[in-house]
Amino acid sequence: MKKLLIIFGVFVIGSSLVSCNKKLKDDIDDLKSQVTDLKNQNDSLKTATDTLKSYHDALQQQLKGVINSLGSDEPITAVTTFTDNSGATRTVTGVYKFKSTGYQTQMAIKNSDGSYDIYIQRLSDVLGEEYAWVEFTYNPATKAITNYDGGQQWSDLDPYGDEAYYNSSYGGAGLTFNVTVDSFNTTTGDISMKFAASTTAAYTGGNIPNAGKPTSTNFTFTGKLTIFNIN
Image 1: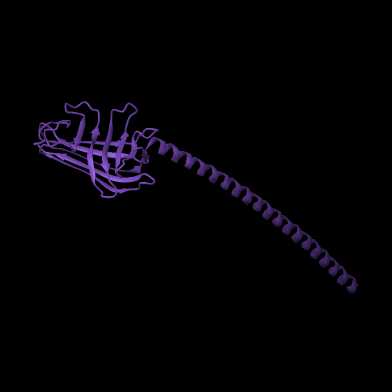
Image 2: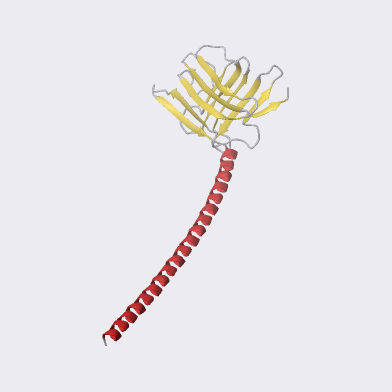
């Protein structure tokens, strides 16, 4: 009788172990299946991420093209200050981003003596009523800058003029005017320059907001010019 009980006990234990082993194997198989599913989901997410990154990069390139075409990646921020009739200082600040699709607002024409006639302009409206500009002749060999003029034009409803224009050919008193070229690459057209002009009460050149009162205009430009070798 004891032997039968022992044999029966061993049989029961053996059956339990077989059942446990089968359940453990099933659990392991389920885990393997879940791991495979997770791996597939991860691969799908990676593919989707790569696709989104590709779309993002393409959109970034398109956006850069639009920004460059508009000129907003090469703006001019010009500031003009002048004294009004009450003795107070008025400030006109303009951010000019638009450029032409051609060369008209950014060009450098090479002359036979190696100098360049440079013209730079940026506008804030499609009508061309508000803008900042500068033109000058620059010799890269000697760094000489001649024949320069430029300024800022805006539109408002105050009783003063809407333009501050300066010309280096003015021979009278009261004008301090400098154009500085920090760098100019004659191969690529990349240029960095500064514009600084100011007048005193002695200035009689006209084209400033309030004649006979101090005026100043300052701006910088960093961008690319279209180079022409036509002379």
